[in-house]
Image: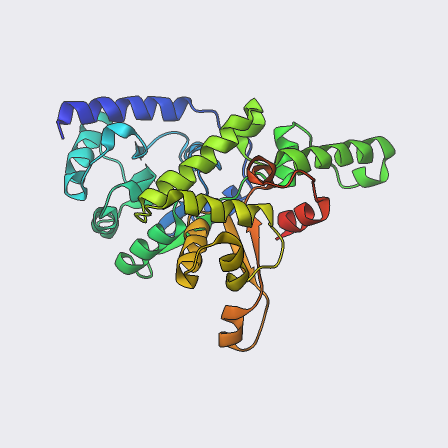
Length: 328
């Protein structure tokens, strides 16, 4: 890549990053802070738009006082086609622009094939890395193979109920549950959370299109393109079926009958891809037998329940299943 263009991108990214609001303090920040002294690469995964970049901003402000770090965002379309062997151009540009630093923050690192080679090389030279990524399977597989024993993981979820209260600028006290007015307020806030979920951008703007676009990007970019799926219509049909029946038992056999997909392995793969994107997780009914465990009934829980009414074909709300989904 042209070095002047790289510098332009890096300057813009760093200016925008340092201007970014720190937002609601995330619950995982305390745990990240505790592990800051470790030399390991710290990998932060989570669904698209769940707040990973904002968590980065909080880490940089709290732990580094906005100084002594490098920041690169590979979600930037100007880095499309960027190759791992060109990382030295970025490193040289960062040093020329900001001086030599030892701490790297890299957003959406998995967008660069072979990124783990650069990370390992500089990590072994005493540099500290924080990485984010939307695809849990890709990051964990590549990082584990190249950085065995040298990385730690943090999974960032959308806002919890307590974080939602913080977003609404409500700080509950220990005995609020015993005070009628405050108990009523907390109940009202929980009903709101039950409806609105915890996706930060959606809560800020309250536009349904935001959730729909996030879901479409997950299906199209994180799943269909990444796994080279040609029948995207079939993929979406299966996901709509699963999401419409969230927190409800299913089996691969029942999904074959309902979806029209005739391959058991195809269904298993499609569900695994959805889990890898951090959009949901599947829980098996426990069984001591590994063979029975594979074929046992399962339930799908959605990472953020606000997506469900936007995608589901069912019009009626089931608060019991929604509560189960939140608790999962």
